[in-house]
Image (cartoon, rainbow, N blue to C red; front, side, top):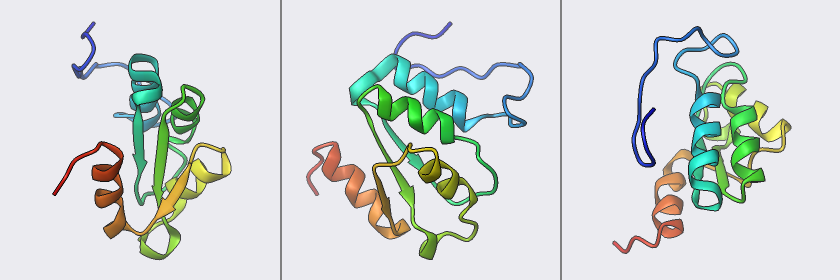
Length: 107
């Protein structure tokens, strides 16, 4: 067990067919950081991360997803949106600035 702010890799079976799993990462983030959690779902195939994105939102955190236009494969962002786990969709080049603004980082 790793404390808050730590990260551990486990040799456990895949979750929902994935290892590492975005869903497990996001659910852990929601459990540890609650309303301070922020998730980002980028281009990719499948639905990995979608239920974890929902967990972050239920905990009061925020989730941004890469928009269809800038995604090479819109599968993962689309699944997260369909599950109700996304607050905002942005083009890839706008996600970094959004994160910096959200975190209060000045350039």
